[in-house]
Image (cartoon, helix red, strand yellow):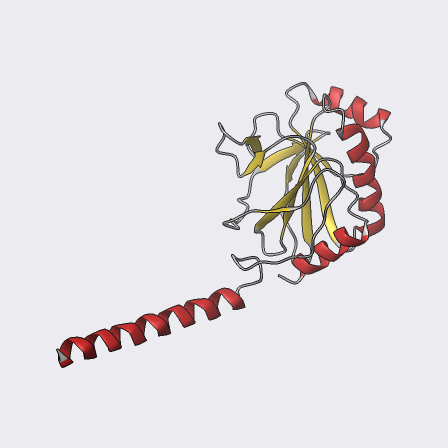
Length: 200
C-alpha cells in the first residue's frame, strides 16, 4: 500500500510539473492562447471574435487587380488585416472606403489588404473600386477560394461567415480572430485591439 501511494505521489508530482512547464511555454509564446483576453472591439451589430485554436496562416499565392502575383502575409512587428469582400456585397460599399482611410492614416501601425472573392474578371473589380475612389488600398483577387471560403464546405484557411469580414493576423502569422460587418479600425477600441495583438 505504501509503494502504491509513493508511486501515486510521484506520478502526481510529475504530472503537476509537466502542466506547469506547459503553462509557462504557452505564456511565453504569446497572449493569443486559450486565456486570451484582448480589449473589446465592437460595433452596433458585431464584436471581434477570437479564433481558437490560433492557427498559422499558410502562404497562399493570389494576384492583385493588375494580374501581378501577390501574397497576404504579415511583416514582423505589424498586425495584418485581411478584409474579405465582393462587388455584390452591399455593406462592402461602406466598408472599403473605411479601410482605404485606415490604410492611409495607420499604415505604419498595421497592414491591410482587401481580398475580393468575385469570380468575374478583374476589370469588373477594378471598375467597382474606381467608382468607390479606392486608389491606395492593396486589393487582391481570390476567385478560386484558396484563401477564404464558405465556412461549411471549404478547406481555405479563412472561413467566410458573411461579408464584409475582416481577419486579424498577428505579426507572427497567427489567425487571431475576425470582425464581421462594417468596422472603423481607426476607432479607439479598435486601435487598442491592434496594439494588443501587435505585441503578441
